[in-house]
Length: 177
Image (tube, rainbow, N blue to C red; front, side):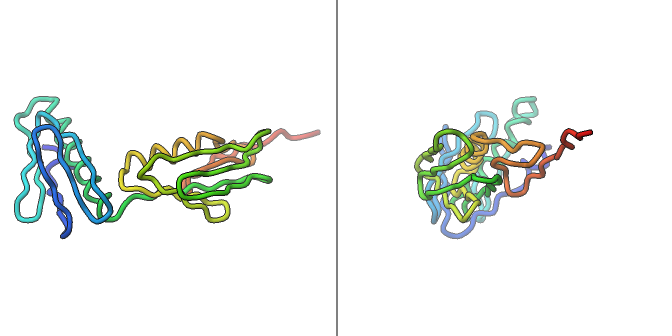
């Protein structure tokens, strides 16, 4: 039995879950998300909880059991609280401007770097910190990874864009004679 899959999902008040044959819709205060309904599991809603069970003990059913529960739980958390990733920009001469849907950054290149986020994701800038907010966990993580990839942190001085909780392994530089 999947340790994650067998845990029931608490459905907070104000959240409605609609189960169809191919998708599961989750509506809440922050918006609406759809999750694919995987073929080898069933989702039942009873007593304010969503319970995911698998149809048989095949290998694919076992794999989908925990996945379906995690996807559904992330959707419930997303429409109630939302998700957030913080990025830090470190480096002399590096600058970040903008917010909302667009960022304009000076990252040591000969040109300013512009980044436009898709709908459903909010970008906020506070000095040298970028915060990515949204209701879809996968999309928030993807946008944060794309922004980080514009200038990855380097191991000698730590310059670049890094996650707020990321530890950069530092290397010793060359030693002169």
